[in-house]
Length: 112
Image (cartoon, one colour):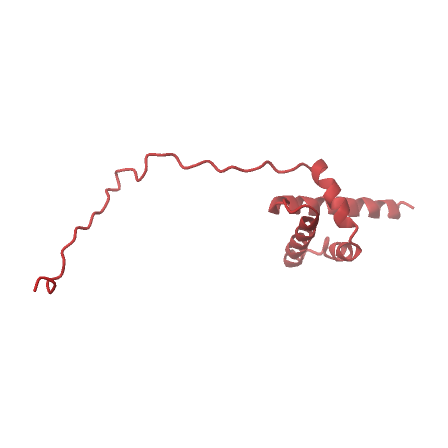
């Protein structure tokens, strides 16, 4: 019976000296990150959420990295309700803008 014999095959092991491909890898296409000026209007809309901003101020300066990371995520997700194209780093930039706005407001109330 011809099917009783195990079939013989050829294993080809490429030489490490030979390049696997001759083409260059494709370049990543990234959109440039928006500037502070472009993200400030979105940050102002986020700042209108009083409950979110209360929690944001509680986390600000707390040195609790886990809470801060979660807060940045929450800010970014809320900002995406206004602009779904907000990227991960742009969400962090919006948090930085909110921190500056919060510090500016505290400075105004402390000087009165």
